[in-house]
Structure formats: C-alpha cells, structure tokens
Length: 99
Image (tube, rainbow, N blue to C red; front, side, top):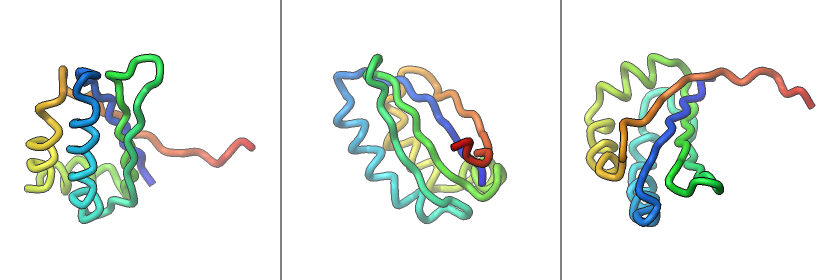
C-alpha cells in the first residue's frame, strides 16, 4: 500500500466550504482504480493547513490512472479554487507498527 499525503493550504475562513467540496469528491476517489480510502485532516495549530491522505495500491494508480482521469479534473474543479498554493504531494509506505 502507498500513502499519498497532500499538504493543502487554504484560507481558514473558507474551511467549511472546502471541507464540503472535499466530501463531494469522496466518490471520485472511491471509484478510482487502486484507491483504498481517503481522509482529510485539519491542523489544530494552523487551521488553514490540511493533509489529504489517500491510500493507493501503487504510485501509478495515483500518478497515472487517477491524475490522468476526468475524475481528477473534477476534484481540481471542486477543491482547487480553495488552494492558496499548489498542494505539496509526497508518497510513503507504512512500516510494520512499532507498538
């Protein structure tokens, strides 16, 4: 499993509208090849900062199949207007638990 971590900056005054837009996009992610789940986390210390976490089977499922799809374009259409800067996206793997 691959974890996509997209760090997103928005205007905190628009948080409710942004969160609503992301919830509208959940079906797009659920339908995507290799997508196993997603979550959105808001930072406490800086409420304009979010991390969108998406679990994929492979990096290619995210970077090739999803990003090349009409559903990705819809995601950007709905959520993109809230971005104050392009999201920073990194991929990671999850090692075995330490405890």
